[in-house]
Image (cartoon, rainbow, N blue to C red):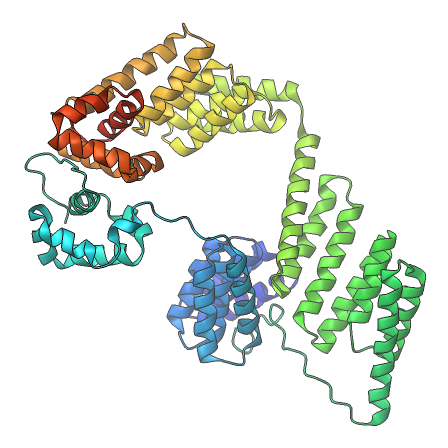
Length: 560
């Protein structure tokens, strides 16, 4: 039964029906959950659909089930590349090559991932990274009585080593009060905590369509055959020269002659297809591309050449597209090309085709009258507290009229009721973007930020809305609620758990990070603790006072 489902999955994958392939491989896995080939195949299908998280999960399972199988690492590397995790991709391909050094797919994947990594911008640095560098960190922690005892705790030492190795990991441990205390010591800033608060401690029958064997070099057996191939190459070079001069008819003649002389090199066909594409003869281009793919599979040509033919076909189909439905074969062709070879140019063309299809769909679907009717239906469901149904109608209203801020505002309210805060915030921001004078957009955004306990941000949102509508009671009430919560922190009325949560959230705020790493502000905080007279002068500076208020609201600093 599992083999039958697997065979169906392979057939679906070969035909480009990747969704069905996933379903068939899932059925096979349910029947044979320890078969590594099934997870490998499903990973490839997921990757073809750009579901890279699922592809990564299946690839990891493949390696777990059979760690000595090189193809599992090829799947793992491809999934990491899809997620733009280039370091992990290089590592996966390298491990695979340790098992099978001659594996062409792993070699190609490693080369592509390495090039992408070299051209990628450097990751953002953690502003607290300098505090954890070198042996000075351990010396400071040992010298301070409040952190010396932590060094006897293995889990704490392990965390600090992990942070020292990669400062970006600091965010993983911010809820541990020992880490917060240590950060304060390293930054020479006193981070207060509540009294009594405790520190938290495919085998032979696997899908070969995705990775065909590399074409072996054909050694000429006789001088006549060698002369034939050299003659075809000369025709190709003359075709290339004519193409550069835009003498397309001459170029086609030379490429056609090369094809007649040597039918075992599909580059002559793809070159002629490129000329047809340039001339606007898209049907002729598509015919040549199909011929190149078919002949390439017969010859087991380099998969990159097959991918190039498919990409060129997709481009020709895209040139002919006039409505959104016309882009379906374009997208499908690019996806097939990517299964042959993951080329950045093909991926870019795929993204452009998907974007063009979506834009045309929106244009074809646009109808403000139906949009208003759907929004009213959503309002009725909202009044009945049927929020999922309301979301469905508001979403339809947005599809019908993407420029109506009311539909975004109403859907944001539904998401807030459902506890889906990130979605609600996104809709509220879109509402403000569409109409900056629409008060409801600010009240929706402020409400989401308030529920997310981002009181300072919520206050700023409400105040921004009041600039457009000074007497709006909903915005005024929002300001009042924020003031109450901020004052609660100022008075030190937070419970230990509330303090921990605010501190951890605050330390992840880039603005808080910038304040704590600012040498001037570090001196100000030191004066607040040790030099009251200097502190009084600092308090007269509105900018400094505003930053201190930020630290108080986030629970980093408490005023007694």
